[in-house]
Each structure stands twice: as C-alpha cells, then as structure tokens.
Length: 133
Image (tube, rainbow, N blue to C red; front, side, top):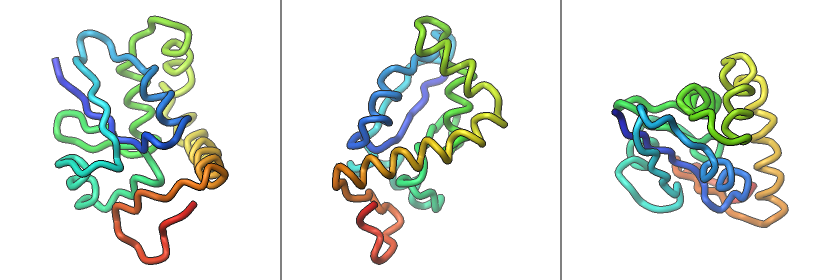
C-alpha cells in the first residue's frame, strides 16, 4: 500500500471540488490533499523541481512527481470505480492522449475562473510580475 500526496490550489473551486471527490482504490492507500498556498516540504520539492503549481496540480507517489496531465492520468488509473464521478473520471482520463488533450482546456477554464474571482497566483517559482491570472 502506497500513500499519495496531491498538491493543488485550494482557492480554485474546480480544483478543490475535483480533489475532494476523487477516491483511490483501497490497494493504493490514502490520498493526502495539500494546499499549494501553504508552506510544506512537498511544495519546496515541487518548486525545486521547477514545476509551476499555477499551471498544474502535482501528485507525489513513490517519490515521483506527476505534474498536470500526468497527475490527472495517474489519478484516473488509481481511482476507485465507486460512484458516478470516479467512474467518469476513470473513463475520461485513463487515456493518456485524452488527458494531454483535455488538461490544457481545463487549466484555461480554471485560470479564467480565478481571474474572474480576482484570486492571486501562488507563484511558487517567484517569477516577477506573475501575481495575477
């Protein structure tokens, strides 16, 4: 059994809802949700890896970081099939090709929503002039 850590922006209503609904199979272990806006060891690791958390969630599993479409694909493969949401999530994102095609569109919708909500970026890579969506 392996525990997984999912790091995402909890201020995004889409991301928060998705992450709270996804369920892993019992054989995989516990899914720990981490707010990207809070300091943590895993956020430090993500930043050291050069991953922009504003452009994709990160799944840490067995010491490996899965980013963006790879994270959502891996979650789909490990998710339980209980409940309508988890069956749909598995069906859509079990295909790496579909995950790679759909994820940028989902990210664009997320960024537009956060812009409308006037949320600031996490900006974990500390890029200048990169505070707003």
